[in-house]
Length: 163
Image 1 (cartoon, rainbow, N blue to C red):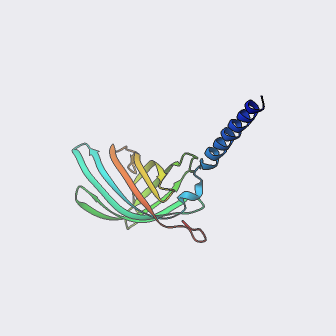
Image 2 (image 1 turned 90 degrees about the vertical axis):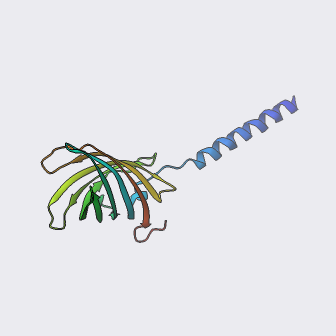
Image 3 (image 1 turned 60 degrees about the vertical axis):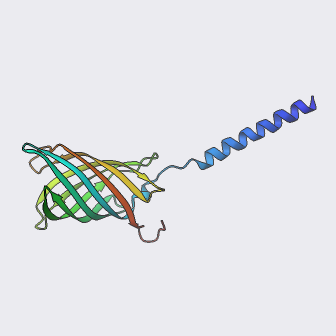
């Protein structure tokens, strides 16, 4: 009988240890993962009334603790190059590392060119972000169908934080 009790005690202890190890290993994302400076590329296709137009952009953006986004980018739409200013807001980062944000894109004169909405996920321990454009609106409210993806990498963490 003592052997049976010892065996049950041993397996119960082992089971509790495994559960504790799995629980300790389970991590969730926090808003802080988005904070800092990011470098990114966007590639895809815009669907215009005259047909598909290739689209690519490279830029940098800073995600601040107040929920704002600011940056600059160089883009190519159908081979037309532009230098743009980016201003926007980001929503909370979900425990599963997904997040959404929206940005307004302005030309160098401050004229609003478009508003874009993104959904994506932080990967590689929060050092990278993969996203997809979910909506693009022109200043007149007209939606532009688009298939655009984002790949971004954290350049620098916010001041006072390490990667």
